[in-house]
Image (cartoon, rainbow, N blue to C red; front, side):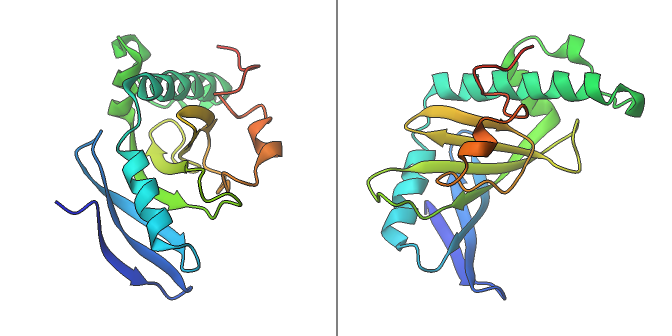
Length: 168
């Protein structure tokens, strides 16, 4: 099985394709600028498939916090998500999906950052973004097209549900 497949240049000069994400057992979209060396993209794809169970549990937990906050903040929209049916944090995946990996160019090619985008039922307009650096979740929240290497202000935002100041 190929880890990366179907690479092609799109109309904006970026490279698109598919990358296998073992946790979900399927291919997701892959996007990166063509100046990023393919070796770095391959290392990122490998790292994607080495995400620990502990890190995945954190991602689910932070995603559940994001969901709860959103449902409370926008309760007038009456979104139909039965939180009482979520027995463990990974159950949040019934209400969301991870659909793409964006590879950003780092200053230090020895560092691998995982930048994942997805859809979620509780925030259909903005979706969800997960950022992982050194097997640590550094951002979970609405999709903001954050570059993992240039995002300090966003990481400190109130909408980062992986942040230390995030309250349930």
